[in-house]
Picture (cartoon, one colour):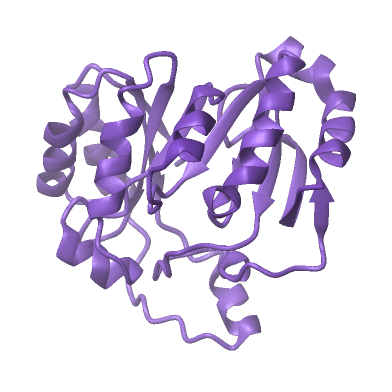
Amino acid sequence: MLTANIHSIETAGTLDGIGIRYVIFMQGCPLRCKFCHNPDTWFGKTDKQRTVEELVNDILKYKEFFTFSNGGVTLSGGEPLLQKKFVLELFKELKKNGIHTALDTCGYIDIDDTISEILDYTDLLLFDIKNIDSKDHEELTGKPNDKILKFLEFADTKTNLEIWIKLVLLTGTTAEVDYLEKVAEHIKDFKQISTVELLPYHKMGVHKWEALGYEYKLDIDEPSKETVKKAVDVFKKTRFKVICAE
């Protein structure tokens, strides 16, 4: 019986996709983002293991809320696709029960038949672009972005899949207009992308780094309201819907 390492569960999330959502934060991540607010999800092992059956039985208790709000289930993390076989089986069961599925991924994954099939059962892809430049991406996350951009290109071939691009706004780099214009240019021809979600950098996760004994090295300020407004304005000029968690 398949089990997954689960970090935590939020039964009434409103920030991880459409409507009221049952959000499962899965354990393990291939990236080490300097701004990560969930470093406690980095490593794969946990004592919180759940089966597909256990999760589906619990999820079905909230189906009425999903129906009312056009919500559903979101897999987040960490990186859910590190436990891809479990994700596939869970999404298959959710679709049998008519439940909307969303996958929040960094995309740093090798594409294979299992990954392709998961996307066939995914209604919404929440796709993180940490940095469009590979060198800068590696400096920020510890990994280059070639796999990530390849994954986005592949996901765009799945014609029933809606994609939201998530961008963290870092003062001095990814929050700047010239950088965001490069991102807008890069993604403008992707047919399945409907929405860009801008996430202003915050320091609310720093205490987790300290509790885990990690050194937090990202010494920047949170972006100003003016900087965030300029970022929003970049994407208001495009065809994409813009969401900003100000």
